[in-house]
Amino acid sequence: MPELPEVETTRRGILPVVVGATIGDVQVWQPRLRCAVPSDLRARLRGDCIVDVERRGKYLLLRLRRGTLLIHLGMSGSLRIVASGAPRRTHDHIEFLLASGECLRYHDPRRFGVVTWWAGFDLDHPLLVNLGVEPLDVEFSGEYLWTRARGRKCAIKPSIMDANIVVGVGNIYANEALFLAGISPIRAAGRIAKPRLEGLVESVKAVLTQAIAVGGTTLRDFVNSSGEPGYFKQQLNVYDRVDAPCLQCGTSIRQRRLAQRSTYYCPRCQK
DNA sequence: AGTGCGGCCTGTCCGC
DNA sequence: TGCGGACAGGCCGCAC
Image (cartoon, rainbow, N blue to C red; front, side, top):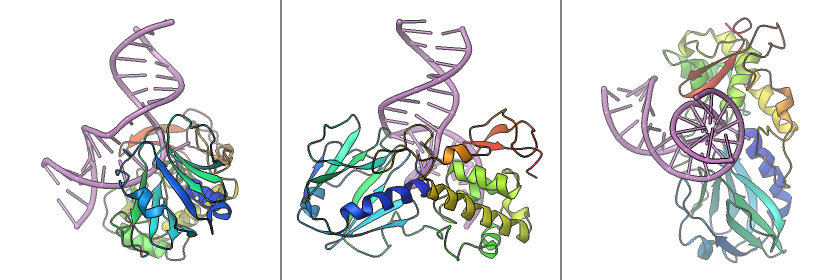
C-alpha cells in the first residue's frame, strides 16, 4: 500500500498526538512481521518520551530520548490513533499506549511491514543505509537521475522504483509520473536524453506533492491516523485503468507486467 | 555488478 | 456455493 505520500500522511497525522508523549506501555500481539519485532521492545520503550517523528523514504522514525523506533508500513500497514481500550481489530499487531490515554495501533493484514528498535539516532540502520535520495529534495534532479541511469539497460520504471536510486516511489506513482512525463515505462533508462529525465523528475515531484496534499491514495485499505482514506485515486491517469480511455488522447490504456509489477501506460502519449 | 525471480502474508476477485 | 489461481500499494536475498 503505502508509498511516500501515504507514509507522509501518516507522519503528519500522528505527529501532533505523539510528539512530547510518554510511552506508558507496549503490547505486541503479533511479532512476526517482515523483520521480527524485537522481544525487548516493551522494555526499551516503556517510560521513554517521543521527541519527534521523521520520515526517510517509506520508513517512519519515531525519535525517543533513548533511541529510534523504526516503522515501515509494508504493503498493507497503517497506524491509527485510537482511545486506549478500543477493541482490538483483526490484524492489529502492536499498540503503544501513551500516558495521555491515547493509543497508537499498528495494523497490517499482510505483515510485510517492520516495527523495530534502533539504539542510535543516525540513519545508519542496515535498512536505511543504502537508501537513495529523497524525491522531494533538490538532490533528486535530472542531472542526478541521468548519472544513475547512464549505461543502464534496465527499463526506466523499475529504475525510478529502485530505492537505492530514489526512495518512496512505488508502483502507483511510478506509473503516474511516467505518464505525466510522456515516457514509456519500458524504455531503457540509459537511453533517455537528459532533458526528458529532467521532465520525469519534475513529474515525480509533482505527483508526490499533489498526492500528499489530498492525503495519499486509497485503493482499498489505506487509512490515515484518523481512519480516513486518501483522495488521490480520483486523480490517477493510468494506474488501474486498463482498457479505459486515456484522459489526454482517448487511446485505450494498456497493462503489462514489468519486473513483476503491473504497469499501465498510454501507448500513444508515452514514447 | 546488474538483473530477474521467488518468497514473505492475507484478502479479494474472477472463472470454472 | 465452493474452490483454485492470480493478483495486490514493498522489499529482501539468492541465483545467474
